[in-house]
Length: 434
Ligand code: LLP
Image (cartoon, rainbow, N blue to C red; front, side, top):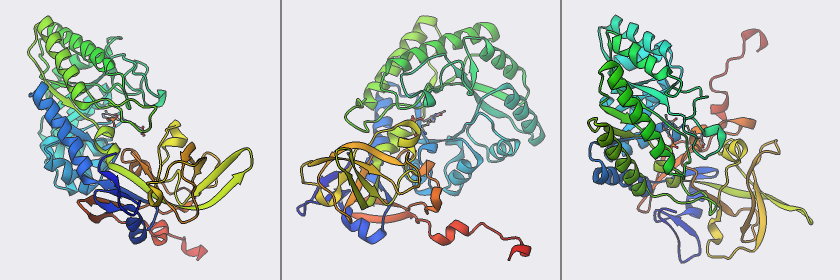
């Protein structure tokens, strides 16, 4: 994974830094972010799309992991940004992210969020539904502004992925359906609104997708819709946002899909289809999250209690768990692990890695082959960069771990880990109870 290697002491290194030293210096649990891997992933998208479809833009879906430093790196790499809430937008603005390269998403944007978007003159608003469309038109009118929008459509494509993260099908809380005619109605309405400019359409068919053909099908359905809109309203869509979603290899059970293959397939499908239906080539926007940040992040833990239940299972407990990585509990997501201080040792036994929460579901990994562990060992789970910190919580009042950025032998803390004080910092006891 990324820049991982084993040094002469037999310890794991990430970005030229000995993981056991990082653990000693910063404590565990801790998220570590490999800057080189993050930049490589950004560049892979830029280069692939530059080659296959130059009129395109890659924007990072910040929901996967939003932070000021990540905004800075992503901006330096020339990517735009997808934000889904006032909070993500606030963070992007604090990082001075160029507002014209920000896309604002969400299926239930509040009036306050829409006002913020209009105030800050954010690049595009991805409108989800008719209520939002009318509200936006009204707010834009009050501010004397026009809003450039994309309309989120559901193309009816079912990507083969965990059903919780499947979003492109018609029965979805997101967007307006192409197949049932609702999308056309929304476009017709939008075209008539005074303060709205329809620039294009958006779809997102799901996440952690390995089956690239589902993107081909989605593009095909979307372009048929673009043609239909042109016939029905005369409007020619200039932009096609194809969402995010390509999968990453968490374990050997996952395939690895190449960003280049994805770009090639999407580019060819679009060019061929546009020629067929005789419409001008649109600008393509793609908005990956997981495949930008996923492989760049890892989590390190310290091993504590080890419980061997004869003939049943050996539980190895670490000092984090579902509060820092809820994905195994939520999606049955699977991870690998490396014992950082025994990185050159062969697997010796099958164990299950559990967290420290008061809940049986707090398992990080079931049945993994690892070298024999003892308390104090440092365990690293790779590929936790996406939806790890982003979905972290304080269950059992565990403080959220911090994040360090690793680059070329250097370690920098980019998010301070929470302290116990932070857990009660926002609380107020009513005077009568003091
Ligand atoms: N664009 C839109 C509109 C999205 O809804 C998403 C993800 C993305 C882009 C980025 O997709 P990605 O490239 O990361 O697959 N919490 C779940 C994943 C939820 C994804 C939600 N939408 C998980 O941990 O697997």
